[in-house]
Length: 128
Image (cartoon, rainbow, N blue to C red):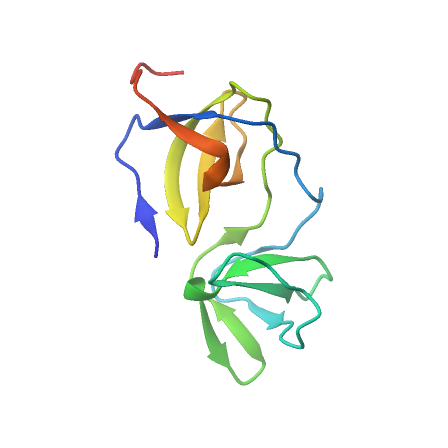
């Protein structure tokens, strides 16, 4: 379920996390992607399916953001599967969460995903 965080909601990385791949799937609303449903790509996160875009890039896509169509799945909003690499103690601004992952902004301005298990809410609500 998509949840949008209130403005100025921050979290701290409680452990290091490395982005698993550098050039993941990135698609615009309305584009059609191909879900890989043969069981070859497994995840512990419910609500995500490995998908391949027309340009060949692949990555995990939230099922809730897709609707089946004759040619595959159509994206209902813009999407990038880019994930952050963080060190313990990094502070991030939370934007929204979806099915166990949080889309957030690093102090560098980069916006990407992190597993919510890596983060803890930061009670200091001052800006970055």
